[in-house]
Length: 96
Image 1 (cartoon, rainbow, N blue to C red):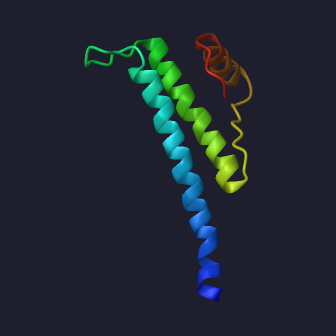
Image 2: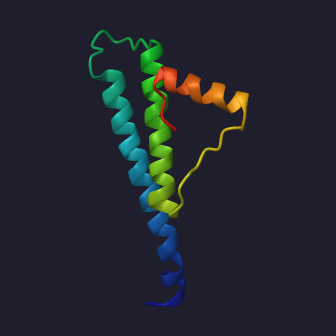
Image 3: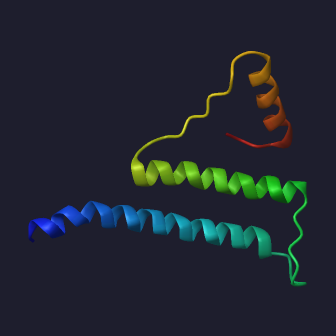
């Protein structure tokens, strides 16, 4: 194998990884949005929006780890503001 092909391998591996993760995300979103909606209209209530955002956030974290080998860590501000943000997220069931 010549050097040019060896140099392209890591790029193709990353493309493969990201493509697979986007496909998985599309499947998860499709399942969530269209599972019970047979009337041709998708209605998202608060819970649906929260679930959709949770799916997106989880897939972002998974993709970063699988494709880049890095974990995403969210650091909330210290003090009252951070406590309020954490409490609000917990109250709606969103997991960072």
